[in-house]
Image 1 (cartoon, one colour):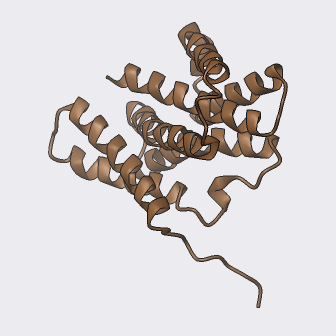
Image 2: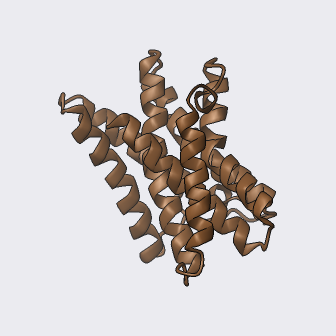
Length: 200
């Protein structure tokens, strides 16, 4: 289940990056590069921080194949995504839910404190999008009013609370991912925002 969810998150963020790049009218090579760094950026930063090198995607070519598949699907079905912003948001949300979980699990596997595990989950989920937005000359979503990183933190807290009940791991993974995805959807639908700070 963990391996499967990792691939789901990878392909979701790949398509998120590809759609963003296409909206900026980049050439196919540019679209692929943006899709690639969106998919692996957060995980690469996480692995470097915990001293896991070479980083995960370099040790398993299946990740490269999945990213290429997501890139091709994005190109082939780009006309089907008639609402580009909606499609981008949905793929980004799925990636957010799944990659938070991946980061949490990586931290647990090396015995880190839950607070650090939650930070790793947030980095894994958010920083591929940060790199994507910077390369596409946008203010990263994580720094705007949208509730984004906060949802990852809440999902991490839920994960550790449910873990105390010794739930089956598959149920724990799915519940946490669905919680993050649903809260993000609700935050956008009902316009839940963090207040902005402005100079007086």
